[in-house]
Structures are given as C-alpha cells and as structure tokens.
Length: 446
Ligand code: PHE
Image: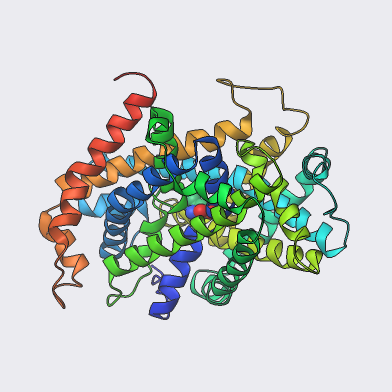
C-alpha cells in the first residue's frame, strides 16, 4: 500500500487544520446564525460549546486519526475490530456531501461578487440596492455556473494530493485574510451604529436562550470546527508524531473563534447603521458587505480582494471535506484517487445545483418547511455532525482503553500532559450528555 503523506512542517499542520476550520462557516454562517438567534445569547452558548465540546472532540478526532493513520472507517475498525462503530463513517460521508453541496453555492456567490467587484459593477451607492443586487446576482442560471466553477477549482486542488497544494496555499492565505478582516473591523467600528451592533453581539439577553438557540449554537460549533464527520480525524492521520495534539486543538479553536467574532464585529455595526434587520438569514452577509465597502475609499478594490480571499478560504475548507469521501473511496473501495475525486465532484454538483436553484425556481419547494438549501444545511450541521460527535466522544471516552488518549495526547509519553483528566471528563460526560439533551430538547422530546 502507498505510504500515507505527512504534513511537512508543524506550522503547516496548524495552518491546514485552521484552513479547514476557517471558511464560510465563520464569515457567512456565524453572523447569520447569530442574527437569527438573538446575538449575544447565541454567542455565549457558542463559546461554551467551542471549549466544552469542540476542543475535547478535536483532541479525540486527532488522536484517533494519528494513532491509526487511517480515515474514519479504518480508525474505528483498528481501534475496535469487528465492532459496528465504523458505520458512523457513513454519517460522516453523508454530512460531507451535503455540506459540500450547499457550501459550493455560497462559495459560488463569493466568486460572483468577486467578479462583479473587479469589473466595477457592484453597486455601493445606496441602502436599497443590497437586497435587490443580491437577488439579481443569485437567482437565475448564473449561480449554477459559479457553483460548478467552484467545484471544478476544488477538484483541481484535491486531485493534486495532500501536502503539496493545500499546505502551500493555506500557509499564505490564512494570515492575509486575517489582516483584511482586522482592517474591515476598524472601518465598521467607526460607523454610527457601531455601539448598537456591538451591544447586539456582546450583551447577552439570557431570556433568549431557547432550545433552538442551543441547537443552533451547537451545530455552528460543529460546523465551524469541521467536527463530527471525520474530517479532523483524516487530517490528524497526516500529522507527524511530534505534533502536539491538544495544543493544535486549542490553537485551531481559538483562531476559528476569533475569525467568527471579527466577522460579527464587521457585520453587526453595519447592519444597525444602515437600518437593516439582523434576521435576514443566509443572505445577510452578502446584503450587508457592499455597504461596508462603500464606506472605504476604493471600495471595489477592497471588495474584490475580500471576496477573492473568502473564495480561497472556502477552498481550503471544501478540500478538507472532500478528503473524507475521497479517502473512503480510495482506501476502503480501492478506487484510484482520480476516480474518487471525480465521483465526489459529480455528487456535489448534483446536490449543488439543487441548492442553487432553491434561491430561484425551486424557492417554493419545501420539505419540513425548509428549502433544499436550508434542509441540507440543517440536516448536516444540526443532525449529522452532532450524532457523529456523539459517537466519537462515547467511543474515545468509554470504549477505547483510557491509556490510548493519554498516549496520543502526550506523544507516547514524550512530555507530561496535565489536562488529560479534563479532556477525558468532557468526552465521557459533558459531550454525550449535552448533545443528547440538546437534541431531544429541540425536537420536543424532553
Ligand atoms: N469549518 C468549515 C467552515 O467553517 C466548514 C467545514 C465543515 C469544513 C465540515 C469541513 C467539514 O467554513
């Protein structure tokens, strides 16, 4: 069998996991979810989930991946031969394909906005145009084209293998995106509605914490940290033996959180300055951003640069979600990497087209009261990922020998890892109980 690739440098390993975590989830999904779910109340729940569930699960996924050097199926199988745990891999594959489908549509919008800004045709002039412009750009057939173009770009990167393309791109792009966000942040803080926007985001009204806010915040934590579907497990399998897993987990979670909060600080002051509603849903960020750029000198230039980087950040995320089904097709089904990549792209294209059309001709077609796009989003983030996370936490917390986690987190005893009891406690108790309670609560069973 071919030897598995290993990330060339430690910085590369962190940059790549952060590359998977940071993407549209932070910049597009976080503000819209926070907007719908009451701002501060959502943020508090989200913070708790990132550190109480996210970090321990990242440690668990990294440990399973690096210890077994396998994809999600192989990892469960090697650690518990003959068990049925590996079936959770199917949930992971389903989730990855659902996410890849709707994610590519939003990434396609970023390409559309990039092209329009670069050609100077994005209108920044007044507050009525944001929505109309979004509708004009995202209904009809053009979004289909951009979705397909995005998936093809993803295909080209993925087919090149693991260490080369992705690592190199992530090393340069992530810091650049961060810098740009900081600049936009200062710009937003100078707007007239800044204090109202900050109050919305940072002062929690605890009475707003409902089961659906809790489920939304938990789903967002899973989505944003790429957890519950075996993605971080697969990346963990490429880590070198000297990578410190818990440190990588905390760094990834912290940077991911910072980007989400920065996005909130950019978006909400603008929402209130321009008298818009924070509850616009998935379209929020795209309707608000043009106003933000209108406040900057040479707005179209900033706008083009931002959407270009956002497009690239989305690519580093989709590359990681593609890796799940591709490593499954290659390592479990014996397909060549090329065929596996083609299959992955073809499935995502079918799903992507349906999602793209649900903003146009299929907008009235709903299942459980949701459009296809929202259904894919909801089913993956709020259902599949938490279930995958539940299985992983129970498996590492209760089924695998306690020593395993300790050995992986201390690099086989090469240093003392003091927080093992805490990570273990979270995996055994906090994660499973929280996930089950929130889940049952939100469907009205308890
Ligand atoms: N975490 C990515 C983001 O925030 C999305 C993602 C989900 C990537 C699941 C991989 C797997 O954009």
